[in-house]
Image 1 (tube, rainbow, N blue to C red):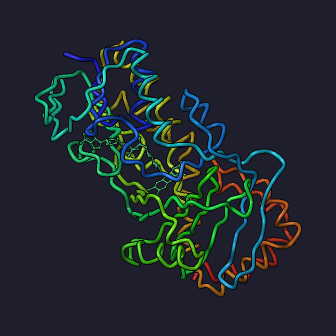
Image 2: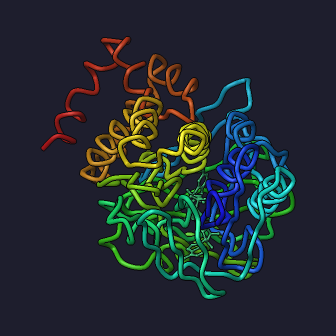
Image 3: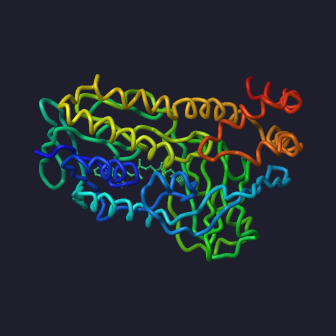
Length: 380
Ligand SMILES: Cc1cc2nc3c(=O)[nH]c(=O)nc-3n(C[C@H](O)[C@H](O)[C@H](O)COP(=O)(O)OP(=O)(O)OC[C@H]3O[C@@H](n4cnc5c(N)ncnc54)[C@H](O)[C@@H]3O)c2cc1C
């Protein structure tokens, strides 16, 4: 019997496996033939996330800020002197993280899909390559998590739909990414144009209710005049506002399987990798004490909540306000954001904790007062 079966060889699974394998016998089941495919990520992460990953991914560009374009065409540049984020090759990140977990002692079984699991005195797992037996299971199997379904675990309250194209073009700025707001391209979210060396990653997310995002991407590529320079397209879903438990007897969820995603930006790597380190610490001690009860493992839920729970909750409240804004409201927000006192706050935005921008704005009473009509508009 294995100590731990980790289901899913994405970033959350590989980081959990790498840390757990220091003291436990770990096997990772990954349904694809290798980690990192299919790639469904813009790859925009901070240096803190790179540290949390434990590896050095290929960096395609270094970004110091963003040009935000409002529905009326007004553009506002928000940037700082320090790098805000790196665009990385996400397939390379996932594959290096899997290699690091293997070097730490974890075994990977590729091309193997979990079908179901059952926890009693141990965990029995039925897979496309036969049965496995383990003392515990970690569900790092993304937003369609089979482990979560088997333990009646966390489910998203809302999904965003994302789509992006790699486009052979030179960006206007090598060190800024561009965001469009408004219903023309990205109702309920925003677009991104990320310089990645010899191509630009052009993508967007939309609210679920507006249907498939492809027509919006086609419109954006058409307006940019680059529809004939697309060299690859991928799409995926982003789970937000998770409800339900992330631990059960002999089972824990991490990453998208636990809906650990920032609602303001759709970024899942910071919370997912932060959670993986907590998971490995809690599970490692629980394995040593041979107490894998939900009660014992609940320390993981509590520590995740302390670490980033308020960011996710605050971020989701901001999202609910954001989706109420019309294009005219967004234009008004653009005029508001161009005030010097507001710009100075936005320039310092922390991408891993984006909702703290509100806390920082509250320190500027005049800025908040002038936003009052907009705030009221968000609340009704
Ligand atoms: C369009 C788009 C752009 C994004 N851009 C960013 C970004 O710029 N920055 C950022 O931080 N986040 C971004 N995200 C979110 C980010 O990609 C996810 O939060 C992140 O991939 C979650 O990692 P994970 O390891 O939890 O899950 P995943 O990366 O989804 O990995 C889950 C793994 O489990 C495997 N699996 C699933 N089911 C089974 C099964 N039954 N048996 C065996 N294996 C299974 C899958 O094959 C997969 O390899 C983006 C998402 C989308 C859709």
